[in-house]
Length: 370
Image (cartoon, rainbow, N blue to C red; front, side, top):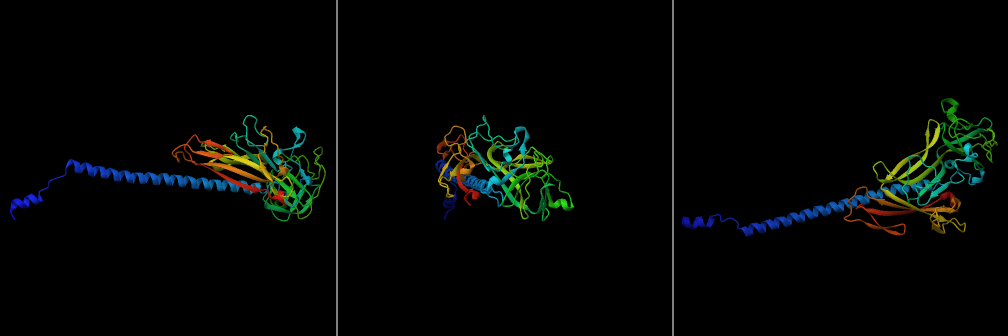
């Protein structure tokens, strides 16, 4: 083989412009495909992550609500609220019962909160419920850490427990012996020795304070002794709970489920709010009414059944509660365009690109169907 032929065979000819353009187009197509896969995977991940967070938050919210609402009206082994004495009275208002301690009305509600007219349900001053959302408040005795009564000295307003207790001065308590019950405020400071087994219910010791030390009915605030009632051995003393659930914006401007409850500060029983679950945009509640007294809800209606702004139901009619929570993703930009969803019987188009989903749960009020 000649040198000329060898050089011709191995001489580099290079790429033509057409070949180069074809290679670039193929490279761009491959890059675009990879980017599309990446963007698609990121969108899917963001959607699935937001949905998982919403489901988890909804589960927590429903669990909080269900755990408390199921216990509405629980006053120990006493079932008849007519045999209930409440010593926490407002002397500036004819010795009426403070509504946050009124166990004769264990379930309170507000339909479509109106910021202008406000609500009759006591809330902390820092609370500002979202207009158009529902509010529900529940009262019950909490048996956790209860005191079993060894002896009750009604004259000295002293309850002796079998064992030490952790109740503090100013805490609101409920005592029940299956025949009678009373809501009162502990008046003694628990120190050492016998005090750790005692609960006192004297007058003038705390805020709001007992208007009388008498546990009999009717409650008489005219005298500090009132009408005496001595609780039997084996009675129980339990914490009195009042929880109100509502929707409010948190410090970051995101809607959240809040709960207010009785808080103790320097012997004073007040209300304090607590953020429970972020991302709860709306809460709508309907109430199951037992019209034939068989323990089952025959139909569900809103508290304001005729829409006139006045609550038409009474708590004694209600045996179940159906709660519908509108959850939204914390992050914006989860969906490509504003989502249209159905909530509370209406079709709504969002004003942002957050993901939204509705979660509904029905809760039976156990103390109403026993």
